[in-house]
Amino acid sequence: MSDWDFLHDMHNEGYSPEQIADAAACGYNPWEHGDWDNIEEFIDDEAGWDSDSGPKNPTTLELWELLGELIESARNYFEVTGRHLPIYGELGELYGEAKYGIKRHKPYTQGSDGKLGNDFVEIKTISPFKTDNSVLVKRAGNFSKLLIVKISKDFEFKAKMLDRKSFGKGSGKHIKAKWSE
Image (cartoon, rainbow, N blue to C red; front, side):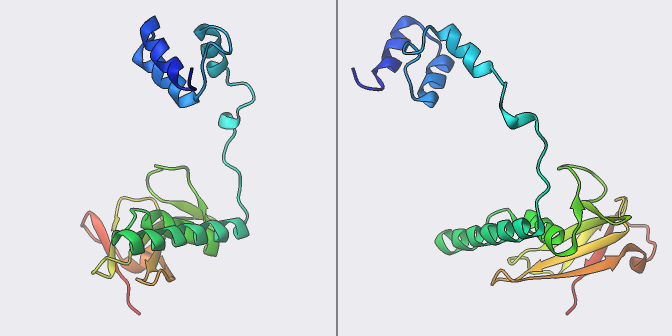
């Protein structure tokens, strides 16, 4: 019997497609480890898994190393496919965290992207393929600083930190901030 013949046997024994798919994903015959119910108990046993632990607090060096790896992946992807990965917003935020020490909020937190001292910071990225050198920020956002990160076609990063009060008051839904050299 080959290593994968047990999948056909499972089908013949009346196992559901989900159970067969789970066995194929595991890559082993469940009969080698007892009946299927024991396998279910083993799979459901979460003890010892670190899924409940929160994310670690990376060092600045770790952030720079990670940023370098992600930039290299984005660059390689573009060179091979001619397409951009939808990763530039995350790269801009990671750059803000590494360079400025911004402590980012949990994902999907509304109002701002992180905190720097007592200031809430919104981070916007101008990607290499964007033709307009401006960003739009929701006026309703809860931030006192705006960090604009610009990524060039050569994947070089520049950034500007702006005070929200420098934009003045307005009635529109968005604030338009323009990158000027």
